[in-house]
Figure 1 (cartoon, rainbow, N blue to C red):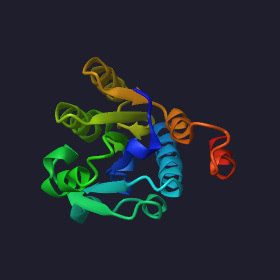
Figure 2: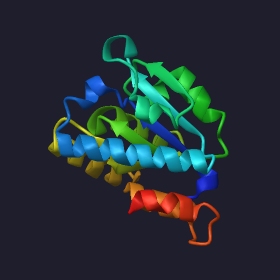
Figure 3: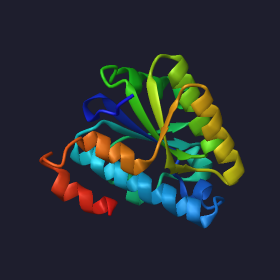
Figure 4: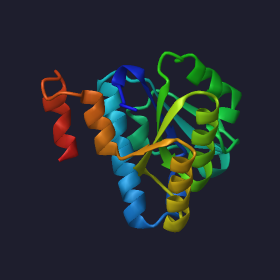
Length: 181
């Protein structure tokens, strides 16, 4: 499947400092940086974006630096975003955008369950591996393998960006590309 900006949504799952603090620094930093770059690109390209916060009363809000390019944040308690009625309604309001780019934490819990549920419901989720993380890298790798076996597309952030842009002649290429160097 080719990733197309006009068919895409970006779903940033549970990037809350309290959850991120339990993730080893290299994976945490990569997930934050790549999620941020994708959110900024999606904002510039007018791709619909949504962030979720797992039980924010106890785990706090999503990171401020990610919220700036994500106009909406929905609180949830379900591990799968698809199983939350408000989030599902938001997604369904964009049913002409069947490709759902998924970033966030934790790869083997909320990201995995959301992607599997979306795939089962007929969406085309794309889990952005280097914009996701888990406390344990082995669990993240296992989840990514399982997703691939289930038919869910797994990609990296830079690939998603360049597929969204599609051509060096794109009017926003010159302004957005430096973030990927």
